[in-house]
Image (cartoon, rainbow, N blue to C red):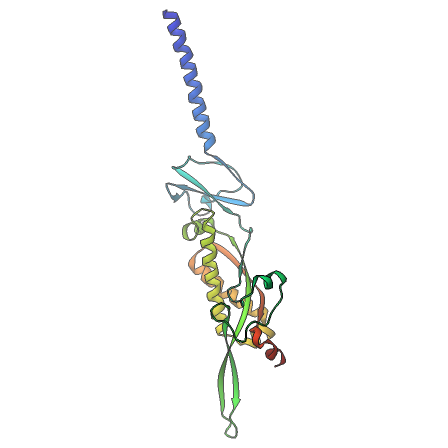
Length: 248
């Protein structure tokens, strides 16, 4: 009986060691994670970023972290992996049929300010008053429609996580809302200080570059950890007066 009891304890001890080894192996395995070539990772320990500067950023390969809730791994796209945001808030309203066929209609008799997007421009002209050589500068405000493509990528994952992103996929919507608002402000400021002839016919590319400069300044001041590039897709006068502008 004593021998049988000893053998039972011995077998139980072996099983217990196997169970403990499996638990330890499972614990170690649960902390393993892989960072792909097009990703970078940051580890949060109790909600705080582990490490500082470049040491906090994990490159491609296998890594280990304490399982949740002690540590949490957040992955972000690597620098150079661009995401695109199309901004049509300054473009005129189009029906679904117009979008599908890409046809441009004349629209209504007047601009629909509630649904049509636009930006205000400033056109300066100098008028000669006559014999006393007096000149008067008058400002003739115009409206312009424009479409934009915003390309952005994460260049500083630590800054990006601290100031912009919550680490969840749904959080990209908030990121793009912030960038869209910043671009809209840049367009409004640049357009409001520019001549419509210069914007549309003379230097449209330079107009886009100046909008990008204003946006870059704001993004850098906010410390978003994001690199942005702006492309002016299209710019035009309101449809209702396009023919008159073309003739002029």
